[in-house]
Amino acid sequence: MLQLLTDLVEHKIYANTQLLAVIRAHPDAAEDIGLRTLLHHIVVSNRFWLFLVLDRLFVRAQETMRPDSLDVVDALYVETHTLEREWLARVSEAELTSMVTSPHWAGARFTVAQVMSQVCLHSQGHRAQVASRLRALGGEPPTLDFIKWVADRSMGHLAAGTE
Image (tube, helix red, strand yellow):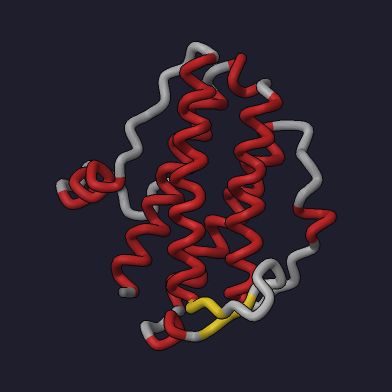
């Protein structure tokens, strides 16, 4: 389970980074408030669950303030990706079965593996929305399929830790 989860998180990091780079390179997309809001939502949700796993305080009022630039959103992604990689470097298979609770679902309990899977699946769905908006603005989203990433990595087309 740990290897699969590591692959999913690393793919998420790769996909987020690639998509942000394409958006930054497209002036209309880089300035689009709707895109920035959606990108911010993705990273805030990611941070909420990650902080729950890390037992770190999530300050909702601070985290949910919509940034006024793509640079601020990008910095949140970089910080979050760093925290995830630090966690992945030390997490054990046994820790993935640890239980956490969320204030959003009173009485529900989730394994750490379920929580981190949620992070990856949630961001995947919203990246599709971002790609659609980018196309509507005249941009061309990159191909971000998980299986393509696995193939590219196994053939040495991606550097380790590529962001």
